[in-house]
Image (cartoon, rainbow over all chains, first blue to last red; front, side, top):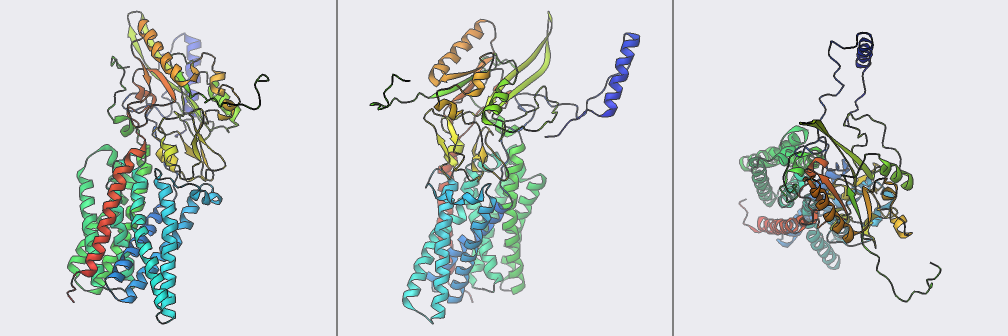
Length: 344
Length: 269
């Protein structure tokens, strides 16, 4: 809230006017304009003095970074399972499992650091609550971290032992569980921000899970390619993800609503747009035109990664901006207008 | 109390209580704000001159659980002279029938009390902040390195059979506390009474038609409730869950199918 403090100048001028009034009985000149004037007014359209009726999110930078890492890790587990099932090279399976495990290991510290009372993080596992997307996310993260960690560990053990059937069975079972929870990791964050009271988020509740899944897939492909994997399936997945991202970005730009402004204008809008362009058309073009050229592929991977991270940062920032706009929450048509509609 | 046997054979169901805040009776004294802070030992919320009428509190928050709004409008010119319009209303947590904060709380810290109020258990909340973005009324707030805070509906006082501090302190009975359904009937009667006296713009704000399904702390205001930052169609964020999870399931299927398809399709190399 902007503080409005009377300035010495206006105070001095008021003193002059008082003296003039005392002396002459009337004041000829004009008065003062209070600092901060004109003051906002309370109206049905702008609400109570234009003050936002919603509270701003309290999430810190760790949350969008977690969205990025968790999404990439989840999608990587899916890639690992698909690669394993299709008989792709062992090396790719191992790499994808390690990326999933690394993301799974980095995620909990980020989420704990974001809590107001981090020492109580275990309270997340006090209840299992389907109507809370955050509760579902906490349980998913626990299951995913365990499975992805086990898969990567068993995979390493399998190689260290020079191929052990029981260990490989454990690795594959854990890998399957990691993929099953990995898809939830890649999508639930969209539900998490969608099912809120923040207009820019909630109006995209059905789009965000698909958007974040595509973003997670694009970043997983990017990480694996930068680690040296060059299986043609990765490029296909990258093209698919970039195509979905392009379509989502195009559809978002087509919708003109005030509540969506934070996704298009201002700092948050610039980040969302930059993320959308990088992970959508830029990556798509680099992948489609680059063929099997290594440098184009690296450029596409970097573009997808940067786009994915910017997308998450932008969407969280847009929630902050959306919470500050008093108009959209008061816009919805309801049956609560005064019965005789007398404008006051 | 002494007549009652300590070995009670039947359990009486506590009544669902409510607040009926009648803005037409509020004089803007802020006794409710002060009483709330006193009883709940809440810190001050800064000493800032807002310039917005007499309201320097501005909004409900972590340390403000009652907030007196001052809606100051330009005078309406009548034959008898300028008629000022200055209305006051004491805002508070709405204690929704379907409360977004309660539904979204991942720790189960936010519970429904036996009086029907929505209460944050202080020792359970880990400050994840999800309730903050789930409240359609912008009531709950979280301190940077602390838990979430909001009106407790004076759960401690109610348990002891006392009236909440704000209602107790209100000198004009603008804040009325009691049985929710009785208060709802009283509010309808009050609107009729005001209409009879020519106050034809009095309206009760209680969004029973939305997914919030009514609020336990409802308001009677003059004019459009939006002027008091009361949203016309507040929705519990839980209404988004089914479509959002359906979309997530579709995305998950696409992800699986895409990954398998990409690896199984014949390679061009």
